[in-house]
Length: 326
Ligand SMILES: [Zn+2]
Image (cartoon, rainbow, N blue to C red):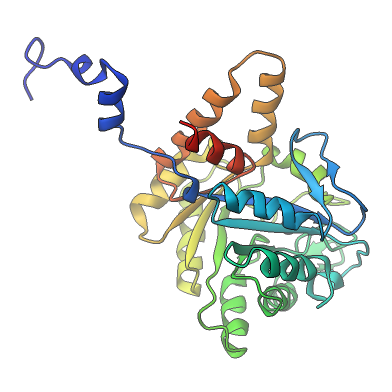
């Protein structure tokens, strides 16, 4: 490479068209998955205070929101359920008439082409708020697998296109794969929350999903934020157990994990731009401290540049609109 003055990197930056031509990373609506919260406890859509612009939906009203996302080019939604009844074993999670099972049927009958992916985890359904079932105060791994895979199966039987286990129990991808295959769903893909960290960035989500643990925390199953090699081991195990897509969550404080995973594995890689990442931008923008659109695009481009093929984001429909009106 020749040096200055023969080489001048400013040549390719001098106008918008040149910059577009050489841009290395482009966001597109079809990079995104849009998370949706569906509650049995409300009779009309309800704003989530800590996530301005995001709502809890009823089984009926969520259809309109899924349709809105689909019409601006978002290919997939990720569903989270808030049941009216909770118990120790999360019975509503695998009830055929549960909130998510109903929402899947409603969305698929009105917006059949949108991909319906479901979050698979017991914490929204257990009265103790942990992601598996308890033995005394310990989250008991192996018995939890059976319930988690039953939950996944019931979502697929209701018409979901893909399941996304987020519980971080050891062995859950293999357990789900086995049960789906036994029931004839050999072509149903799994997107595993492979490297899901115990993170402070989930706080606004806990309000949205009403899923805070009633005692203790999730550090015995979610990952320690100081570790990256361990994340690669988690991903490796999920791949061995048959996941089709791997995920890193959260995204922004874990771009190095995304980058390492992308370099090391050849599966599609998703990154979850979580509630705290969303709410921080919203709060700063509301105060006039930052330009919301500019910061959102910069953050999401950064996540894609780090290696994410898929970005799960509450900004998804808004970004799709911005991209269309560019
Ligand atoms: Zn959970």
